[in-house]
Image 1 (cartoon, one colour):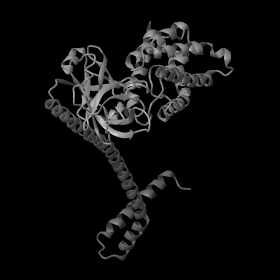
Image 2 (cartoon, each protein chain N blue to C red; image 1 turned 30 degrees about the horizontal axis):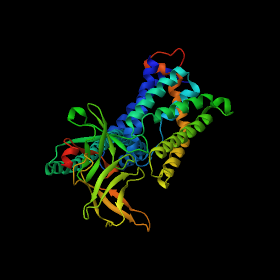
Image 3 (cartoon, each protein chain N blue to C red; image 1 turned 30 degrees about the vertical axis):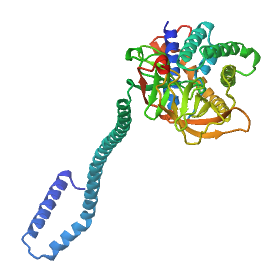
Length: 172
Length: 279
């Protein structure tokens, strides 16, 4: 139970970070979706029972808070989760390298999905210099921050039982 | 050679004699021997005295300075804290002054317009870079409804698309899903202002080629969409492209509202009913 509470707090923190903090920092510009690294991490290293509730809660929160078509975040997370689940079979690299590659691919996939959603419903061109700049910036940030996030998640998920003051038996 | 007793006695006698000699100096005035003796003693002893004195003095100074330094460091730290507090206060005062200015403008604007409004604060922005919405801290409990227009004194901002009891999600006019029925103030040419989500501009669509629209023209709401009250400023024309062919001209509109600095907004509570507008 405490494990799911921990995941919930983490998801809420990440959502708050990208809705109430990062958009107000002009230096970082438009950051990528921080829930993607979390989904990638859970998909790679954690059981289904851990990843799916996070995916559902995160997707729901983001879909509800964003002006994007409802369900687009959930869809992104679901496909990223499924793809990453099978990724270790296809990639020979492991750990933070695999994680970084998958995060970048996840961010790219999310942007492709958004582009598809926009192109299906709207007449304006999606791939303007402005939007391409945003995509490249997001990929750049994903590439730069992914190894640090991997370390952060590893630290957090090694034994979150310590947060509650008792050791977790399965160590999540 | 001598017994212990003899040596003690001899030493005692010498000391007594020496003492007598020394005492006798007090009675021998202007004695050169006395001067020489004092000088000799001073010569040999004073350097050590001096050294000891200075060492002690230095030690004392060091001790004093150490404490003074510690005190100074503490004072320094204290003063730094006070300076930081003062800086923070100045920052807060500036922030309050700016907020005051903004709120005054809002209040003036609110009292100048006939519609009923509720001030709200922007608490979050859209997590996606492709869509432009904000969350405000006023909701159903404050009289906000779905579709309520949101504005700032400079112009309209958007409309409420979803809401809860205490919060509302506002679709900004620069979002690609937004459309506002609008007029060119000078010529009354009609069109629809649509968001682009790329940068901070909108497009004034369906403006006929023959209509006179110039850069700098003000775009206002027509009120015909049943959402925004008539005559509210939207923005100004920043670019006009009239192609040789085609029915419409391409008009780019720059909104008056600064979406980067959106902090406080006004929600229009009694937005016009479409039937009222048409009648």
